[in-house]
Image 1: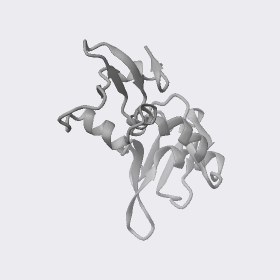
Image 2 (image 1 turned 30 degrees about the horizontal axis):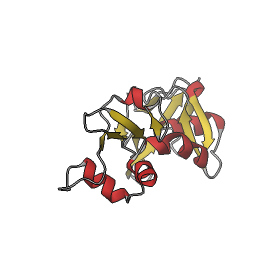
Image 3 (image 1 turned 45 degrees about the vertical axis):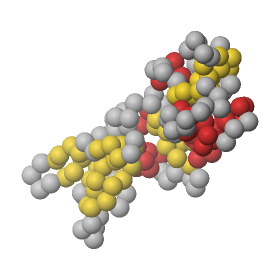
Length: 174
């Protein structure tokens, strides 16, 4: 089923499979979009002739289901950035979305090691490590980045793959 995108009637339309098309005089062209800071967006031309980026999933959802309430956002159920089908889109509150995505935003795992190089303790971020070690966050960062001559504690950035990081919490003794 295809439907015109609100505000772009006669020019752009989409379907429930998550595809957006541009209508030309002789044919239609499928728009692929591009990744902009982790969000899949498509560039559409407004009635005033200005080109603007629009969230791909948000356009699909609003076209078929209606407007999204204030302080709510679109989340993809399967976390695949290219899958913008209507069945894969879900509305969540921004606070709930922050709980899901906020922890992985910038936190870099830290581990404490002994003199032999064995891991004693690990944390999901430098802030959590600093809190448990009674240090400042900046001190932990400086030690991990080898910017101090004499280390107060022996910590380093964790050396693992992101898939292993999800299994741990903060401050777990290994």
